[in-house]
Length: 205
Image 1 (cartoon, helix red, strand yellow):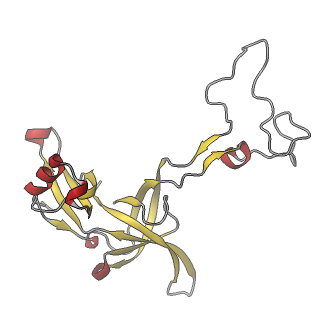
Image 2 (tube, one colour):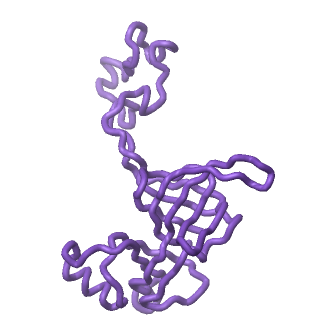
Image 3 (cartoon, rainbow, N blue to C red):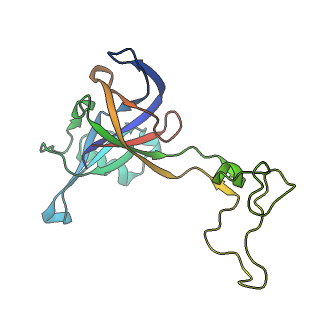
């Protein structure tokens, strides 16, 4: 799937031609530099490696500097491979937000917000004391029973319990592109995308 690397700017809303208010997310998509071209003869598959967001030489390794020097560009913070581009791009080419068009649907992948250690009510949607689920009767947000005693004498793997929540790779599919602002490299997609503000996202067609 072809696409671009971007940065989540934040959420806003716009009005359509019927006056309906549509919530949307603003993404700074590209421009991305082609930092490597994968070919079937050498690598066994065809893909483009794209780099996004400059970083200083001080924070780049010598291996990174040598790799990006071949493409004639500065070191990049985020590097991702994409497949399925219709055009034949070469090493060092810039790919802008204009690869997307208004009205088409895209998938957006990012790392969800980290929530820290959370209980079962927030993490898994348990009912709490109001619904008195899982064997509890007098405790507000406790998980209740987690298994039998003499058999199997253990807690089964995958039991929904308290623990660290968020900070996972999440992909939201079929988000409609509402607007493409090419002069500012901005992409407006309908709805919410995973991640906090200024976090990296991967937009795929």
